[in-house]
Image (cartoon, rainbow, N blue to C red; front, top):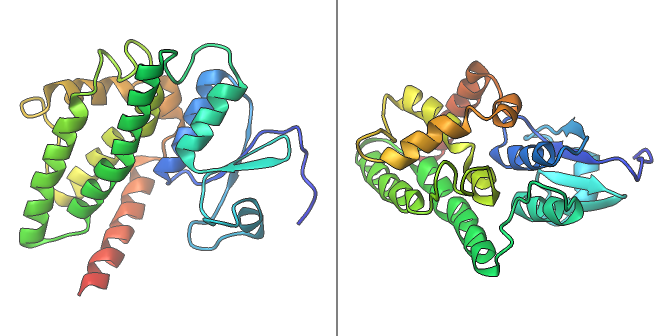
Length: 226
């Protein structure tokens, strides 16, 4: 593998990965220039295996010749390395702890519940849908105003900002409405607000591209259960 510029900031990721977005959004919020290196999700490169030999997954941040894996660990690293405003995590210790708690909730509860809806059929899908609705109602309780971070995007918003776009495309594919104004009024408003943030919009793939990717993912997942 060719030598790399130790001073450059690089992101190994993929525009169809919700985890990659978190790193890009954080760098853009901090105004940090970076190079995005696209990784094939199905054909892992020598570069990726070198920089993340343990999990062998994207995203990976490369900074000062060192590799940092795992999206929310990277977000914290960015916040601690580039200390200027805006801060991604709250300054208050309790609020910092709760931001980490809700970001973990997104990964451990929201992600699997939505995947379960998307990759199931019939009665299994009906049950998964109810579970996902309850999970999102719980997440809604963490909203502190316009964003989870208050009046500006913060740590939890970065963890969850993929939700509106992904759920919108999922709804269209499955002919569902997982989040609406009646059942989740605060989260519905947040959905509209966060996808309108310029840096969020700027990193998202086209709707057609995401739809093709998710349809393929669903077909593989459903087939694997048969």
